[in-house]
Length: 597
Image (cartoon, rainbow, N blue to C red; front, side, top):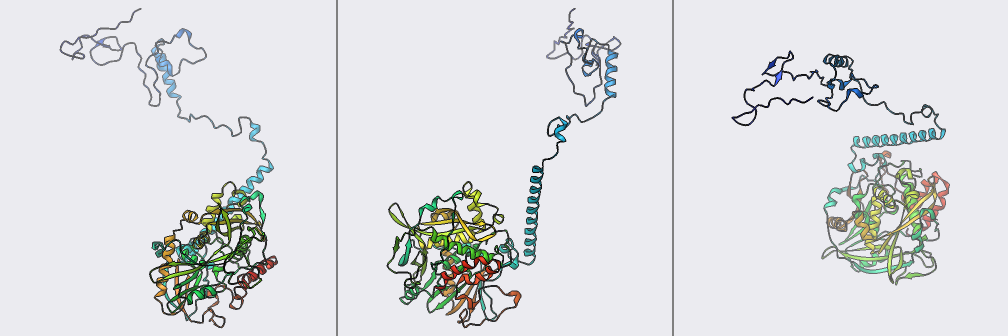
């Protein structure tokens, strides 16, 4: 049996087949030859459907004698079986088309726990059920907290609150640090947006005029403390801490009489001005223009004497003042922790660095905290110099040279507010803990850094202090102590020294244009701005009687007759209502502050 190729036509006129075929290439189905278009001979015609997948044109390798008896020959491949009869093939194709249904060809889903039915019907274990219930509870609490934040945000926005305060907490929780009296005259208001554009460079380093006090050495063993090796925070009731304002400082009075400078302040007051744009809570500074001199003071019992907690956090704190987690109670607790921490991390072996002049605020034989006061002078312009009293808390030896330290402590009161548990994250994710603190306490950390820069400290030590239990605000433990160089840390928190001095220079220039008298610079409790008021000369004195404002507009600063007893005395009354255990804490702070009155 041979294969007949057929006649291949020859085209003498060019390439390709001739215009008219010489012999017929195709034949009709009746067997007659035709030169036109027809069907190939002996090849069945099958009308394929669009949904059919076309296979091979012809299977020359198939042997019908060895067909698989278990496989149907009437399938899709039957149309290519030329050994069958044409009518049989067409009948099989018709049967396929009649039974065709468009169905989902994906395999059925497999059971989650395997094909065996006993795994699907296994009863749920009680422990797993409890975990799922707890998980649902946590999700519900997060959702409730999110709705509360949105509710407070909408209320603040509807009330016309400023963008900075409205994004953080409900407007009624933010109150002015001082009562604005009817006879006060507002002279100017400065929005914080203008502060970001200011810049001024001062000669560095400044001139040291005098160093007073004495410093104890830092105990380097505290650098090895970790959450697994925590140390209990001790109480130092016998040591006195002084928060003396500018005009009550005898050395500043002497320097002013000698015309050493035209502007006088303390590092706490300057840091509040330098970091004003990061503040949320209200604060105030008293400005006195006497002749050609300018004095920046703080009121007795001012907010500047307390350390804020979670000031820049988005989570609102309880509004009730007697609550142990309210802003006022936490500020008193943070101040108490900071003072005790600064004394516990020292080597109390009697070895002390004493400077030429002793502590100017301590009486003879009185036990005082380790502190040295550096009176430094900066040149603002040709005719204006600024003198500030700056504090350093300790000293240490670094490569045979003496280095000054500042000691401060961050405190954790409840991990639910910050979302980061220090006991679990301090060792493994220290950067995350610091980032959370920078978000929640941006103003406090910026002020500590600016104070370290003003005092010329070589190192600033940050302690991480936490409550023994979230509901115990009296007992604390030290979890870790980390050291930073002030300039490096300032760059890390985006604190620009040129911008800091630009803010101070602009406020000094503004106040130098005022007439002689007394003024108050107040941070607005809601809007990101500060206001300058002209006040009577006897304002904030003991015999000055202020006309009270309506009760709904009043704020809660310490009463004037209680201010002389110090910061913690006024705060201790609110703490006593929450727990009687804080009495000893308040007494310690009273002793520390009574010398400054």
